[in-house]
Image 1: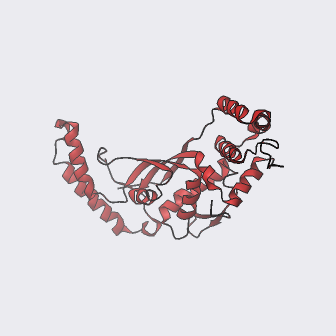
Image 2: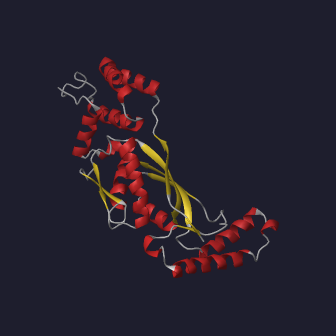
Image 3: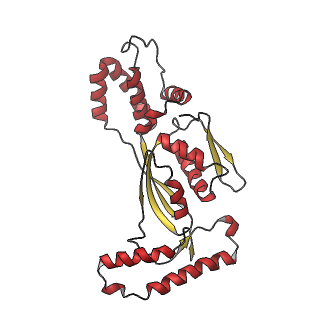
Length: 263
């Protein structure tokens, strides 16, 4: 058994096609929308936040005074605009922007929990039908860190797996048979075995998952991971997550809560 630690990588995010965005705004809102773009796009903290603001302002034609006769003033900065969106709970426009993470060395306990948050997400996980583990890699929960019986139980499974594996001449098989046997053997592997997963979600979903999975009552592994996710989001998307605050927990992880729950 090899002890490992979960790792979090932000590997992709929404990117604007700026030349087409500029043309669209000019076509849609003429000089008013073009002036708004010219005065704001250079200062945007991220493409994702800017896209959300574009989408929100289109709903009310609020790029500037004069487009919509009902609009007599607008919020001048992106921070003010998105702060108001969060206060009103207009969460739908947050779905336009996505972020993709790679979670490495997480357990299948973790991915079973993650899959429950399926709305607004895409998940691609390492397949134990195709991948035959060379060893059991495991993140050991703090309460089991010094428990020799816990380690012994995992090593017993690992030894049993290797014993079964050695019964077959893998080099002589075609891949279809390897897949069948690999799929059969995986059934004795523990849920705690390390896996890797790519997870894409929109910001509305990410806000919800951070709130749920950094709760003091959440499973510690997923709380550790989403504590790190929340830290990354707070830095990279300061406007979307401006209302999130972190509370340090006794185990060193953080619990994050937004001021605006219904977004």
